[in-house]
Length: 569
Image 1 (cartoon, one colour):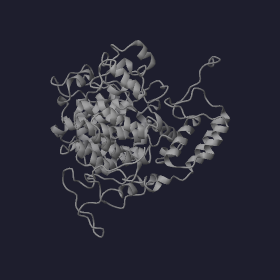
Image 2: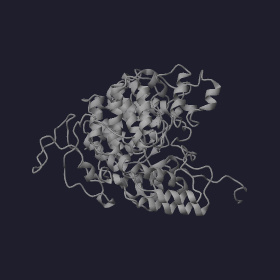
Image 3: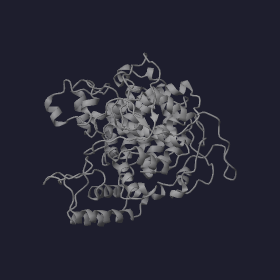
Image 4: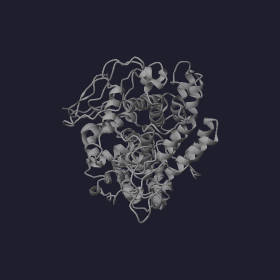
């Protein structure tokens, strides 16, 4: 057996090397108000580089001594006190304590009983104490939860086989058979784009054991199907322009008469010189332009909801953060993780336990990764945003802290309120905002996004103002992206096409933002038949994935499985 040829390119593991993490941690320190000046000077003096602007790794590996220095400096940065700690709590009891009190509760009395249904529910019906042995103090008892929340106020600062179109449905596709298995795939060079979609066809998957099948509400099932379809539409729409700057997105769409954005991106009619200057995302152009969409291709924005569904099928709503960690190690290939998820995965392999997995050498802990995992927690708690937020917290704290967690709580609660069938988009957003600590930067960003969308008739102007405030953040950070999602949903006023197109046209993490906006707007539409056919037909009721047991699954099947989990107590 011979070794690698001389001069062979090294394996450049992205989102994990200390020399690539240190620049991002310095940036996060500046955003937190930590005094990182001495660390920055030490890193620069040693020849250290800034963080890569868009890629997950620098072009050339650091020499061993520089890598060792980066690791030591990451430890020093972690020890710096953060001035934001008082307004951005991280434990569940301290987050919960920031929620508005029950309207009829008295400080000296137990909280008022929970309403049976409706958007005014103030406490989760299915709350579970988040895993105290992992470092989270137990919740002392059922306290007040979020109600509809305040009006946004002033902010500051920055089945395999071939599918069918709606109207010609033949019933749900066969669901996955649950036996152990996992997928594999090549290591992406950067970003959070997986590789080419695998060929359709169901795989065996893990067996959660015999469980009684609860009855499924057909109205909720159709609503959830629209949420799954909407998420896929928004994701696929955003994939070709992921990582592109805002001016490039606008130029590519305008070149084909598709601005304001109202349809799939296409390469037909785009001048060659414009494509040379702003090429499509290289991993998505072959599967996500209007001329070549053939089912929903794989993406982490769709893989993670599948993993969340699998988590609930195995462990129910009382799952722990450690349950999620074990599920990832069993079912999620490391090469299909990115940013905070990859760091947490590495930390698990190093023997760390949650919540340490979210904090050790993890400068991405306030990025968007937890938000993209939140939908399933909203879908399975319809009408109960507090329960959805508490469930999302146990998921998010494997990988994220503070604003990264709050973004997941916001998304889960917004979707849960929408899934209850009684709220419009604005009521759903109020419910989402009510579970976010009100003095946090994430709450401020959401309020700013909503207010700006109300103030401006032209959404391009909304986006320009958002970029002026939050453009200094990394394009995957939770603050700018959550603000944009809130602004897009507010400005669209419940319209599905406007919701996904505004979210994608605002730039930053385009496929993730489109996916979350599409999930909310799809749920509010109430049925996939109410989503325009130009969006649903190309997806062919088929999703590609390397999550075992789900490749080629139909959105109708996913909705049925999700509705079953929603019905379980």
